[in-house]
Image (cartoon, rainbow, N blue to C red):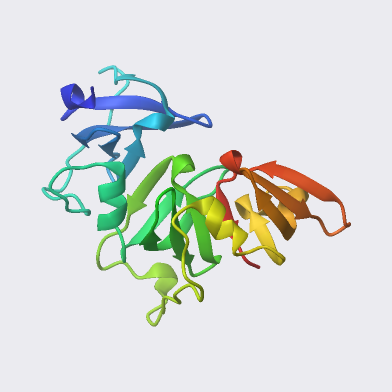
Length: 217
């Protein structure tokens, strides 16, 4: 559908109420690329609420995108973009009012491993990524010249649920700790449900389908 809008300026509403405006650069089966005058936004279709061609009287921006996109691939799809972005410094937005910045290090079935200079190793559900923005190849994260990527110490499971089972009996932070009840001891993972023991000793049960990021403190 977005192929019809390549080269046109659109306004798009993304899940969570985020609004973006820019020129459609490319489109694949499950993802499209929007250039906003500064960044290339790789946006999965599943999170698009609505979009429309920008009204000329509202559009004061002239988009003049570079001749090449920062992620090179023969045909774009969500998984191919993730695979091609491995090792690149990127911005990933999943929820709330902040993005995470870092490197994709491993792409699994339904999640990927993300190394952030600030948040360290994170496991991010593919289902909840609203957009991904790659930085220029010569970008230096936080001006850290000697940033080293630390590989995950244990073997990775193919699915997020199986990976979380490996973290049982460890302290974890869900979704960046946006609620106190999302920080605690990961007691058990079963049938897409997470049993978490909070600091007060209270058991809280979370539906894994709605968990976006997991990290160790």
